[in-house]
Length: 429
Image 1 (cartoon, rainbow, N blue to C red):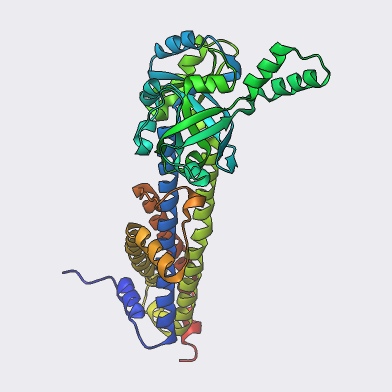
Image 2: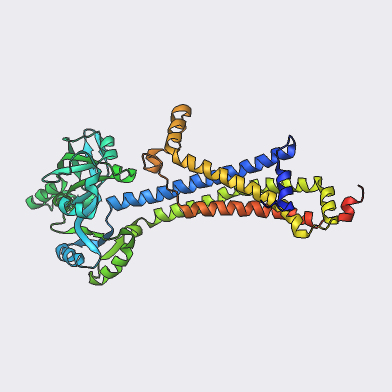
């Protein structure tokens, strides 16, 4: 077995724990690197999991591509058939969507309706998989309500919810002006009565997508009910499309645009949620750089330790140089100390961070029950549990960055130690 080079041998001797203040500083430095890496792994994994889980929720509820415009689409059947023939598109479905006023008992809210054809819609989105009570029955005058909206209105399966559409507001105001001026006839009064008349819908199911904004704002109704509420006749507001691969929807969109009328546009699910995803990506990057400062602070502790060692070992450094030790041999004595601290800190931080990620939900539940600290409110973050996804490349970047910072911190005192003049070091010895 080959003996260690004397540089590494001395580095390990200097790192041996002794009952000195210096060893305490070294231990604190290791703990600083450990905590920095653990927190970085936890935060980056949770934010990555949050973004990916959010994408899965969006893809499950929203279409991969949405066709729409500023006006109603009367010729939607022809567009639906044409779009379905484009390469990469596997299914298509029409929809009507807009705000309404929903009333049950003495409670009134302003959710959005989504008028759909359930047979076609289930081929485009995964709405059928989100039903938690009742069933996806949108025949006749039925409706399916989001779980949070149902809770806010106090309704359940079998109840009847009254829906008023604000889509006819301008026409209602025009007819009221005609009534006030005395210009309204019997036909105008009948039309006004039809416009104001609400729709009574029986709740046949409750869905829960896992995303709060969907579960609290959407009311699914049959396509014909949506058309009646917004007086669209046979028109629709848009067409939903499903592609072979949701993450390549932009490519399919480029093939789709040439076959669409000029007054219509196509948007991918990423386009419609770009601000949200961009915000998450930006926060993830900002958190990485902010938390990296924890490791930088720990690196300053390593530097402080090595500077102290340099001062304490001045005589020994002078003797080594007098005996012929080279500059880089002296550098490696101190550089190896910093690298060893970095290796131990990285290894401990990696293990601790992955452990916390594995038991994150149990830890959050313990904090909520024992200390009353809600670290991941469902209403705010829209998920029942803390999502997390460990990406090997992210972990590698964190560990390599931490090790590099620790090594650089050790390089400065190592450089000054190597430049020490042996004559001055031994003058008073």
